[in-house]
Length: 231
Image 1 (tube, rainbow, N blue to C red):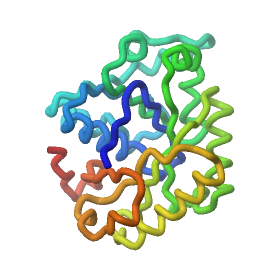
Image 2 (tube, rainbow, N blue to C red):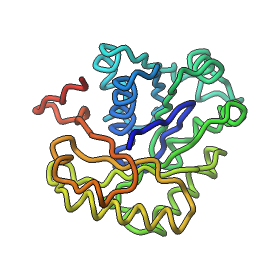
Image 3 (spheres, one colour):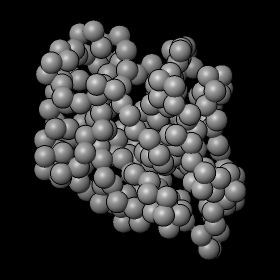
């Protein structure tokens, strides 16, 4: 099954969910499929592992990465900065907004909420069931509620990003998939897709998975490791 997300997609998630890795790989995946893709890095909270770290790799394959000036998000009144305004008013075939982690990180979205609602954007939560606070359904719901309250946007879908970094196995992916299915049944949220490291894809029985699978080429790695090639 193919991932066919289009329009403005806002990716949210708690710290450690892997949302930024998902954004980078989703952007590259859709670009490889021929889609026009743009990305905005709205993560003004986390100083590490942000979309901007992979900016050069994304731009090399024809994906524009917008990094708005911080001054626009610390004003007393909501201000739609020009760069992000352009993305929202004239979105590409797929426009990805990478918001900061947890409720504090998505506070910037509150300033954009009215414009995003008019644009009929979708907000999707990345969930890694092997991380604290999202290892139970109730924990996932608590994170979702906190994000919705601060951002003034409604989460409408879920991305399953089950992983333990270098320790990840195919069994972890399948167990995480079962968890995400249970979460979606509990909430009636759409399961957009799950992820799997590219070197584990061949170990998965795709007959047991009823949603698309996004191969992950790791980009956000420690300094002593090299990032995978996006193409």
